[in-house]
Image: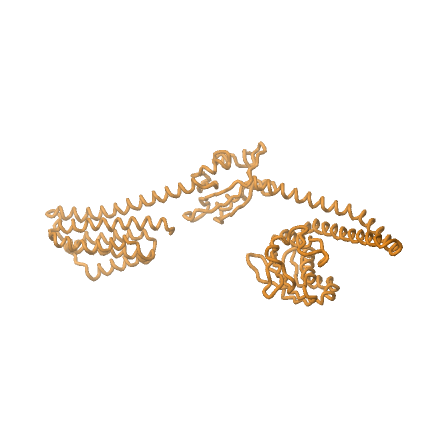
Length: 517
């Protein structure tokens, strides 16, 4: 039970306990037992009422205090009336009241208490109701008053809960509506009308192939009624969470909504009453589509530009190489130096263009994801890097790598870039590299490529995956600064993420996640 609702019910039962503090002395006086006895009888209910008012302990401790207090009041009333049959009814009123806790412990305590009282200490005394009208009225009025007070307190607590719920729903930015089992909208908050631009009931009335409104899926295709989140939850009870669907008007207007639905638990069989919440994601979708178009155009531009530059650059490089071979040493020293600068610049330009082509192609595969054995992919990568391993005296340890879902060619490129970097930035001329799996969570497998190399300064780690980011001088380490940007693009296209950490003992650890196979 939610805390707010429990506190409301606890407060109602405390009121009932305080009502007995007032009622018991009056009943004592009506049965001619004197003021002293009335004061003595007042002690027990007052004690429990005060302790309950302190609100100490857990829910169960507080509920047991109120339970024992009310049952003690029942026993007092039976004792004061001399064990009248009618007085025992008070026990059952209290048991009914204690069921408000919806907890087996106070309820079972009450039932056990009543059972003991009825079987062991019960003393039934008949009396002449006709000659004792005030006693009869006092006893029965107490029962009626107690039961009425319980009903009133419960009603007021429920009314407060409903008001709190209504206020909460009306202040939400999300649209919230409730649709009953007959498909009628029984509740809608102001945000629902604001987000839809009309009364939500108009959407239900005008839904369908011939109506004003129709649902479409994320690809813009008509969404049959049976496939809408509302229908699925209403017929199966299964909740739907953040399902993106379009609400299209016949005149062409479309609103994109992220819709969540949940069935009301009180319904035991379909169709269910459902609560629907939704947010307008039209702007976010349009922005995402615009960004996707921009990225596609940028990738196409980079590919075309790089491809078109390759041929003239190849010609320039060829003639520069011809000049160096034919005229090296035949001109003055400055000429030889200038030619070397030109040849080196052309070579770097060729590397840059190849890197741009590689980046534009990264993640562009149209092939569906398939199971890929990373162990096999890593083996192919090591064979292609055999020369680099010999050059850097590389020692590579490969752990037990799992199967993931993805594009084999792109994953091979990803691992090749990371392992090649680990070999290149070894620091002392002897490279040590580890490739291992680090577990699985939420359907994603985490892979690590670690090295014992020169490492990356903490302030530079967040920039290493950006385009053209070089962390070292070109004279010390060659490269274009594109390789890690390609890695990030491949990982993100597979739905994962990639980051870099410091390795304990020195070096770097690149970690990335991929969909589990």
